[in-house]
Image (cartoon, rainbow, N blue to C red; front, top):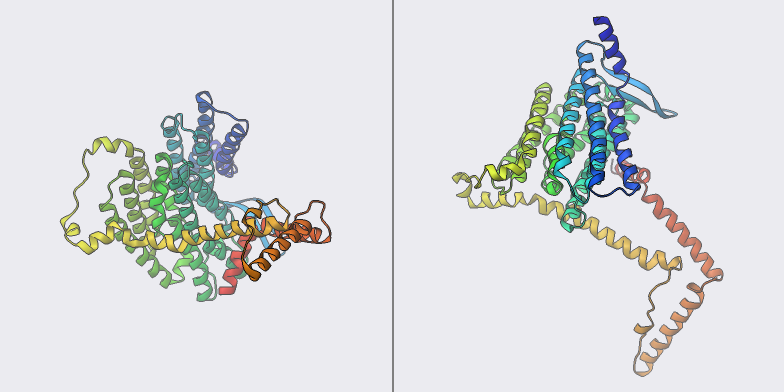
Length: 506
C-alpha cells in the first residue's frame, strides 16, 4: 500500500508544470469570456468560479507534491524538455522540486486561493470584476514561476507576469488619474530591478554558460569580480521587487488597487519575491561577503524606515504596508547575515499573518474607533517628525528622477509623431491658412509672400493626393520610420537596448 502511495506521488511530480499552467488556463478562459462580451451580475459566478477552480487545483496538486517531497520522491530540479536552443545557448523547461520550493509555492497557492474566494463577494458589481480575476490568475502563474522555476529565464518571465498584473490592478480604477499615475510610477520603479535581472541573465550565459539556478548559485565562478557583477544584478532586482531602500516609495502608491490585490501583492506574496530570489542564490552571495554586508545594511535601513513611516500613517492599509516593509527589511538583513533558512521561515509565517491582516483591513475601521497615539519621542523631535511625515522626501526624489522624465519623453514622442512622422506620411493636418502672416512695409509683405509660397509648395508637392516623386520618396521614408518605431516598441528590442546600454557602461 505504501509503495502504491509513493508511486502515485512520484507520478504527481511529473505534473509540476501544471501548477503554473492551471492559473494561466484560468486567465485564458476569463479572457475569452471578456472577448465574448460577458457583462452583468449573472456572469460573475462563472468568472469567479474559473479563477477559484484554477487556484484550488493548483493548491491541491502542490499539497500532493509537498507530501511527495517529504517521502523523498522529488528532489532538486526536474527538466521537462527544452524550450528553445541556439549554438551556445539553451533554455530548459526546468522546475525546482525541492522541499523548500514546494512549501513556499504551497503558501503562495493557499494565499492566492483564499484571496480569490474573498474577492468574489468583495468585488461584486464592480465595473472591472472580470479584469480583476484575469489579472489575479496571471499573478498566480507568475508567482509560481518565480518560486518553482529551475532557471533564471523562466524566473524572469514570472517576474514580468507579476509586474504586469501589479500594474493592471494598481490602475484598476482606470477612470481616475491618480490610479493610473500610481500604476505608472510603480511600473517604472520596478523596471530598474528588471534591468538588473536581465543583466544577470546575460552575464550568466556569458560567464557560466547556463541560466540554470543550480549553475548560477553553484559558487563556481573563478573570479570574485564576475561573481560580484552577477550578484549585483540579482540583488538589484530583489531590492526593487521587495520595495527595499532606495526603491521603497513605489509600494505606498501601489495601494491604489482593490484591497484583495493589495493583500496578496504587497502584504503577503509578491513583496517577498525579492527575498525568495536571495534565498535561491545563497551560494553565490556567500562568495561575495561585501555584497552580503550591503544587503544587511539595506535591510536594516529599510526596517527602520518602515517602522518610522508606519507610526505616522492615518489609514489602515498604509500602516500595514509600512509594517510589511519593515518585516521584509528584516528578512533581507537576515540574508545579509547569512541566516537564509531563518529568512525563509520568517517569510512563510509573515506572509500568512500579513495576508490575514490585509483582508481584515476594512473591518479594522470599525474595530479601531480612533487612531493610535504617536510616541512623544517622535512628535517632540520636529525635524525628525517632519522628515517621517514626508517619507524622508524619497517619493519626491523618485518622481523627479523617474516619473517626470518619462512623461516628458512621452510628450516629446507624441509631438514627434504629430509634427514629423504624420506629416511625412501625408496624414491630413488642420489647415494653418487662418494663421497666415500679414505684415506692413516691404519686409512684412515679403515675409507674407514667402509664407504663402511655402504653403503652396507644401500643398502641391507634399500633401497632394496621388503624389509625385517627392511625395513617394517622403512616404518611403515615413514608412521606414514607422517600421523602426514599431520595432522599438517590441519587448525583445527594448531588452536588447537595455543590454547594450549596460554593455557600454561596463
